[in-house]
Image 1 (spheres, rainbow, N blue to C red):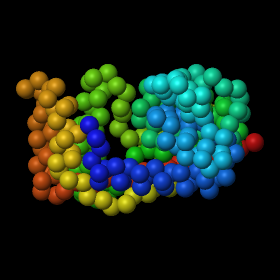
Image 2 (image 1 turned 90 degrees about the vertical axis):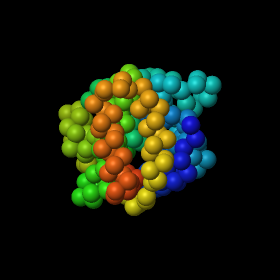
Image 3 (image 1 turned 45 degrees about the horizontal axis):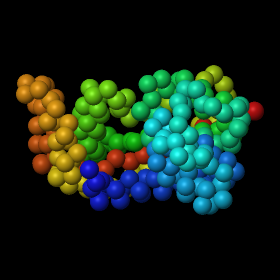
Image 4 (image 1 turned 180 degrees about the vertical axis):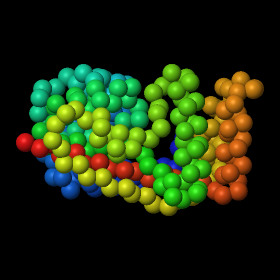
Length: 228
């Protein structure tokens, strides 16, 4: 399914904010964990930054994008200045093990981002409720798709050591159509048994969306500097 243009625009907005923060760190080399198709790797390479990506589903035909497991990174200690995990932690079955490996191969630090909902906003509360529903369906189908990981949980998952941790919350208020949410939800909804409680939960969420609307999530960007 093609991504809704409004969702695609906001995805790119959050991606660009992450890239801007990374460039501010002036990295000479970057390992992008959970790199997907390698969008960040390609952008960094075009900027003259040595970039490598790793992903368990990498196609394996690009020498810069390696297929591998974050819990067993095939690199030596300190091989990269910075390690990035953009909207990856909530996909990891063992976050402490993954961060332990990321710290091992980093010389300067980690740059981590996670989706973030501003729960002081009632419409964001609806969006966060749907996000939990959507991820729960993915987990029922065997994926690891946890609710968004807060900064406190990311910090607690780091291996023992000295860190300087900064967090920036960023959100551009953007409305997403109900049709876009229904298009994302329908394939998952169709898999549910008729009497499954998540059908009733979805009906309540869509009622709230009709009444109040739906806004796209923000992101929290966490800079973890390693201390000598």
